[in-house]
Image 1 (cartoon, helix red, strand yellow):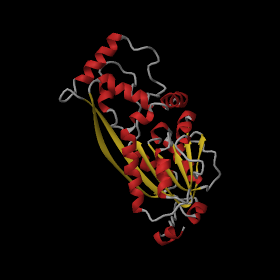
Image 2 (cartoon, one colour):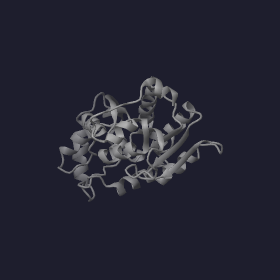
Image 3 (cartoon, one colour):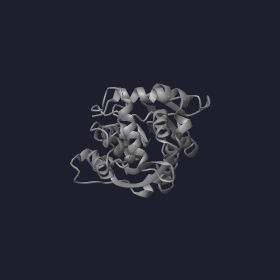
Image 4 (cartoon, helix red, strand yellow):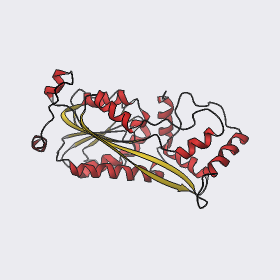
Length: 284
């Protein structure tokens, strides 16, 4: 049900305002990257999928100084912004592509990192693509928004009409199942909630627009929202205000898993899984 063209257009338009508003996105990225401390692994080739303006790409380069890092994003203006933040001697490279159709040969990457991009994709398609691109024993680390994200905004619109005004986010358990279907092993999933507050409803909407986080459901209402309809929505949203502040809840899902070993891949039936031992991972 995703309108990929609309999603690309929204992020292209948001490239010049994204960094000013992406406080939560950077916080979630930092929390995801902190989890790499628990993994004894030295990747040589890293792919940052949905890299946006390159925040994670630069953080990964600081951590893995010898690694080559490829940033991938569907919006070319985002990549242009990322390039302006790199030095001429940087080991970072960027390519404009859809996460569901990565222009990479099989077994290219030791590590794939993706911060808040999966919610704009078909999870089965994108995770199957990640499994294809990862080398045997490679690691996937990702975040996504869960279904409780923007629940106040969704409820306010539901009080007005039956059109989907807020993007549909995939549940943690469904993402875990999709990892298994894609062939990943040792998946670990968890989630946490963030509650942002704003002075008014319009501030919420302006920030979402500045981030490029539009409703890209194909069943969305295509016409203009009239003044009366918007006033009803605004009144419904203001009804959940606390201390004169408008809340916006975000559910952040964190996941990581390992690509199966070569032996498990060759069987292809899922009956035997032979992941690398930690000592083997350390030697890579």
